[in-house]
Amino acid sequence: MDDLLTADQRKGALRLKANMLQSCYLRNEGGGKFTMIPLPVAAQVSVINGMVVDDFDGDGNLDILINGNDYATSIGIGRYDAFNGLILKGDGTGGFKPLSMLQSGINIPGNGKALVKLMGANGHYLVSASQNRGNLILFEMNKKQRIIPVNPEDLFATITFGDGRIQKQELNQGSSFLSQSGSFLNIGGLVSSVSITDDKGRVRNVSLMGRNKK
Image: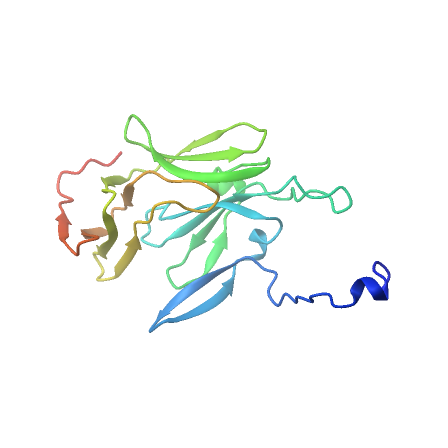
């Protein structure tokens, strides 16, 4: 900075320092405490914009699907374009393992922005990825899943697995880069029961019997 700015220009300047330059997630430890945990190195190669968190492989653990890049940087810096989209496979204990493009089937090579989950006309799980000044990309999940629609007033779902694990999923409106996913839950084969709580505290139990896997 001494080479770029004169002493007069630096006089009275506000100095800000960054102590964390990695993309992270915050783990809720309960009791109002959170732990900041960096994502794997594979997720640090560029800017992260779109994100969908879901159980993509049906093992009962939440995974993370992300896209990114930024071509709007200055000429002197160069654009951030090292990212091709990524799935981080969750292990259920807060750890995530990057999957290769061949393992995940995900390839979003452009200036990735929004990323949303959608339910197709045939009831299949879709993911839509936008790329600024590029093609809109659609991915279809090839694994069978059970889809449960949710209502605008629903706040969260309590998901119980056959082995006794309980998972709480918030049903928020709006996510990541100026985007809004479809209002539904993706339920894997290991789930034994689901209950949904709305904004008035009312709870409804969802029957999984006879629900088609698509």
